[in-house]
Length: 103
Image 1: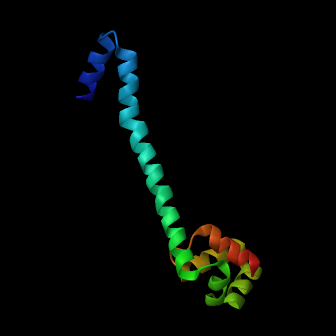
Image 2: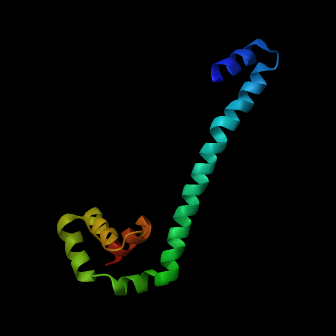
Image 3: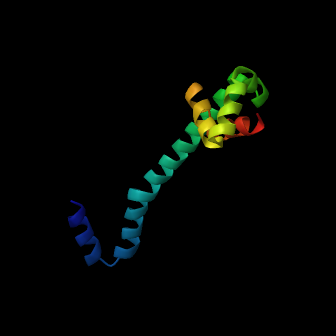
């Protein structure tokens, strides 16, 4: 069907503008919707953690600070961030990295 439509478009006088419209409708709008949904999901996840813990200070009281500090010093920052996110699934990456850096 797409081949037939594209053949008809190339034979008409309004082909370039109609082809551009089809491209926008078929690719750009769904891509924009996916990006928007992903950003909204991340924002909701972050707001959920902020509602749960209130701030980084309250989250710091809940986590195992000495254990994460030891992992950070021995294995590196990213390993400690990964361990923190394993302990608290759904914790946004930027909040986890900030917390591990401040320990």
